[in-house]
Image 1 (cartoon, rainbow, N blue to C red):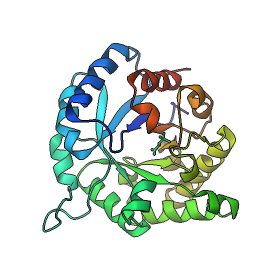
Image 2 (tube, helix red, strand yellow):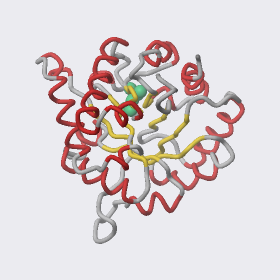
Image 3 (cartoon, protein in one colour):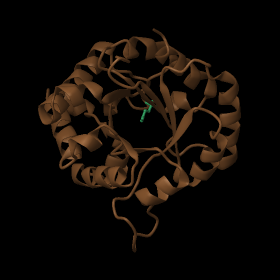
Image 4 (cartoon, rainbow, N blue to C red):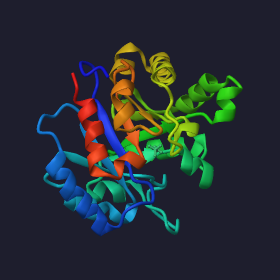
Amino acid sequence: MNRRYRKTIIAGNWKMNKTASETKKFAEELKTLLPKAKWCDVVVCVPAVNIPAAIKAFKDMRVSVGAENVFYEKSGAYTGEVSADMLKDLGVKYVIIGHSERRQYFGETDVTVNKKVHAALEAGLHPIICVGESLEQRELGITMELIALQVKSALAGVPAEKLRRCVIAYEPIWAIGTGKTATAEQAAEVCTFIRTTVRHLYGARIARSITIQYGGSMKPSNAAELLAQPDIDGGLIGGAALKPTEFVDIINAANQE
Ligand code: PGA
């Protein structure tokens, strides 16, 4: 983390978990546990149908609500999809784009990720753009090339003034939901590389101000070490974000000096 130049953001990614009533219960419990001092921003990304419940439940807490996906067209005959304007209108602030599960199971590509980033920014949302390599790609030694490609394609055509609203999450696929966390060194190496890539594209000032998260089995026991890395400015947390106590432990780790 480097709070002087950029925000620390701890974001939960609930994936396809929790009903609207469970959302309310989670918020009530979280409220009693959240630390008073504010150092990091807290975001909870919930399934689309739970967004209204989440907006209501987190209203009086300093917790922003995020979506887990968005479609890139503004409106029209796209059965089952949700537009960026619809999210914004509900009070959503962040949206996860290009999560590896969406790339793997729902056919998302670097091209659709880029279109979604543009749509989200256009609507005034803050995209959390996910990038990350598979185990095979890591073993082939092509992690950095792949990450550069994903970052550059996601940001293609995004002007500098809008980049300030983007968050990049480095999520090695082999660490997601596996309990296998990247070591702090592995995570830091890629996050630093992402910042360098942004610097080449947008210059030093903007690269210094962008929030880069790590995601992949982040939990209370490893959060402090990961967040101590200068280029890791927060976390995108799946499993451990489903339990208020664990989520708060990670928030507390981010609140350490
Ligand atoms: P995990 O998920 O923390 O359960 O590994 C992270 C993510 O997929 O964003």
